[in-house]
Every structure is written in structure tokens, then in C-alpha cells.
Image 1 (cartoon, rainbow, N blue to C red):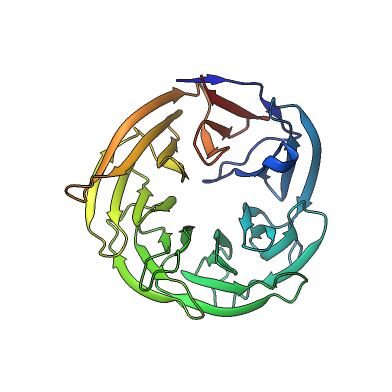
Image 2 (tube, rainbow, N blue to C red):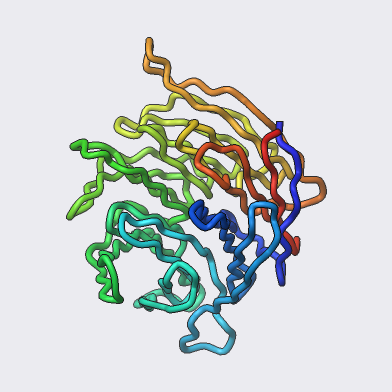
Length: 334
């Protein structure tokens, strides 16, 4: 069971974007950082465990040629082995900051190239893999940036071609030294999933075909891909083979966010149907099949949920954002 805790107030409200919440826990300082997108700006908040806001900062998308300010599509903390960077994507490019948002260390402008004037140009889908940060684009390509241990000498090292439509989300997990292990998955607007092995060069291992429904959010845990779709379904696949193990009719409307608590194998799903569900994943030691147990359902009444994240690795607390909602809702286990 979970109970509602003190909310964290926002200066503005959350935009109606999938995955519109990022959480960074700093146990050593007893702080929680939240990041939410609102139009052309991103709000960063630091809060004590009881929800008292301690600091706020606003970041804006870097402006290029154009009349209107560019809209931000996502903000996400990337935890690398040696540093933490805050990555912000927009219709103009990709901005990388020190973790507190104080200093921008890198800017990558998106090249529209031969794109017609009616096609939207944007980046979306952010994840860290080893010492790389991977960012999806409107073309379906994934940009791989090599991040140094310190300083701004960030290099675009590779572009991954696996998708024909815009990337929606990227998920990674540590490879733990295993060869040929699937440690990154990318999703797109057609529902196609591409499974990759990271390294000095990324290798495409398999494609999991879509079925014409967008996949807004994806997660990866112990070789299991959890994919949330626009029809409310969650599908669990074997990462290395692409085999479908479990299909759950989890929500009545589109799923807007998935998150995983790696220590306990808990999966959080949030949807436009106002519900947030928590599931427990496990792999049967006898058969090797993936088993799912429903642990909790929370109705966030009269709110169009757009972001949801666990606030700790064990999944004992989570936070939720909603469209036009000027606060971050917090829940913790009883």
C-alpha cells in the first residue's frame, strides 16, 4: 500500500509530454532532485525527503533561427560512472549541463538538412550507457555522445540507424562485463523496438516489430524489455531474442511513462486513464519464463498523468506529474 505524501510545488505546470519527469536521488545529501518540462523551459527542484522545496532553477532551450522560442521535449539526468549530467532536448538541439543545471557544458544543434518545412525537427529519448549518452531524433537515428570524465570535450562518436520513424524513448542497463549482452533498447512512433549491445561501437542485435501503435516508454531490467504502448498494453520481451513472454492489458488509455526499481524488479506504469500501477517482475528459476504480479493501483483523480518515476532503487516511493498540474505528487509505501 502507498499513501499520499506532501506535494512539491512547481512554479508552472507540467507540459502534456510522455516521460515528463526525471528524478535524481542524492542519499549522501538527503536530497531529491526533480526536473519537469513546461513549454520552452524546464524546472529543476531540490526537495527534502518530506517534500519541502529547498531550491528551484529554470533552464531554457537555446534559441536558434526562428520567431518563436523552441519547445523542450524532454529533460533527464544521466548517471555516468564518473559524473552526472542533465540533458535537455528541444526542437533546436541537445543541451548538456552539470547536474545542478548551473553550467552548460555542451550544445549540439539539430541539422534539419533536407527536411521539409512541415516536418517537425526534434530530439527525444535520453539514456546513459557506460561513458556514452544516447539521444534519439525525429529521423529515427540515435546520436551517441562520448563523455569525458570531466570538462566539456564531448564528442558525437556515432549515429545509430535502426528506426524509420521518430524515436520515443531509450532504456539501458549495465552490461556487467558480459559479451553479446543486450544492454540498450530504443523505441519509436511505430512501436518498433531495436535492441543494442553497447561498446566502442554499438551493435544492433535484434528488431522487435511494432504493430502500428506508438511505444512512448520502454525499460530494461535483467535482460527483460518492458514496453508500454499507446493502446494501454505492457509487453514484456526477452531482450536477446525478442521473444514475447507477457502481454498485459494494463490501462484503458495510452501509457505515458514506465519506470523500474532495479533492486526489487518493480515496474511502474502511468497512463492517461489517471491510473498508476506497480507490478513485480521475476524470472522463474525453473522455466526461465517471466512472471508478473500486480502490487498496487493508484487513481490520480481528474489528472491527465504525463510523468511518473520511482524515487528510490527499491521502489518504496514514487512521484507523478500531470498536465496543467502545478505540483509534483509524491507517494510512499506504508
